[in-house]
Length: 232
Image (cartoon, rainbow, N blue to C red; front, side, top):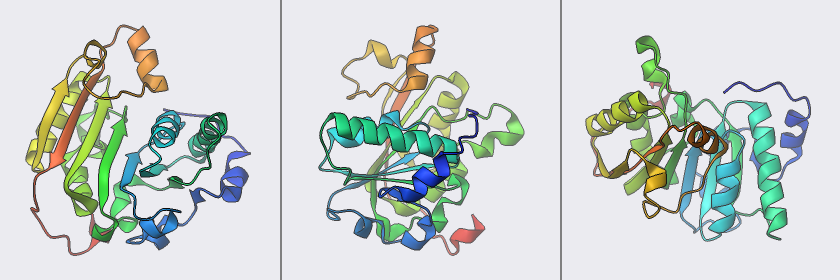
């Protein structure tokens, strides 16, 4: 999703207490950055405008959350959305960190020591052209990286409007050694599937009559050894 440049975003992010500008410095030490470091640690990949992270984090104060995106304008909006939701609920922002990073280089900022409990991927770019499919956040190439820092039995929660991306992701997960424990081709017809937090994209697609696909998969075991994260 393209978004216009927002000149206020960078200054606001740099002044924010829950924004990290140099995430590579926290590799292996993310838990220490939170007020309550012993809480489970979760990760949203491609947080966009932050509606999801603002809602889920404010509803689960017994969990810590990291949200990543690559665009300052998006992160600026995410920051404001987090602030608005927490202010509305009269809460301190103690369990959220947002940061700017290229997810393709995720292993430069997260390691096995970070022990992520859950990964959330919501409506990521489907990259429909064959030559671009390796850029998909659910591609086997990416999943192999996530396995480094995702805990044993750690889960991936994934939602998309795109049929091809969803079906391909089922294959990617199998190739990477993940087990899909729950899936649906029409999330909104299954209210008990999970405690759903509807994102802006989700609402837009649903209003267009597009069914939302969703799955939960978990990491079954250790499958590989990564020598050098900079090579991935």
